[in-house]
Amino acid sequence: MRLEKRNVLNIGKKLKVYRLELGVTQKEFADVLNINHQNYSKMERGIYTPSLEKLLEICNSLRITPNDLLLDNREYDEYKQEISRELYEDILDFMREVKFKCLIILSQIKMK
Image 1 (spheres, helix red, strand yellow):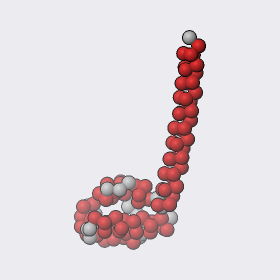
Image 2: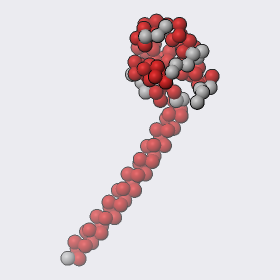
Image 3: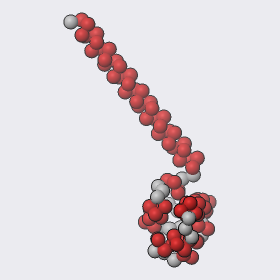
Image 4: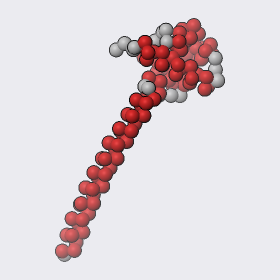
């Protein structure tokens, strides 16, 4: 799957934000990644897309997840909300089932 130019630019912008939060220069961060600082500069400008291996290494060095870097925050937030809703529904279903079983057990105890 090839990343669209818009997505590559967004990744580059996010790389820059996360790098600046660490307080390091492009050259310093490129040295950490063991790559040429010009290539790293191209990543931030959206001209060069790193390999998946290098992308994972970058995320690890920045202490972020690939989702933080690759997904639009809105998309990621919507995904988290959807998962939370599904989990909430599963918990409610489980609680209803437990309540029903408890009522059955209580009614059996009362009959004895």
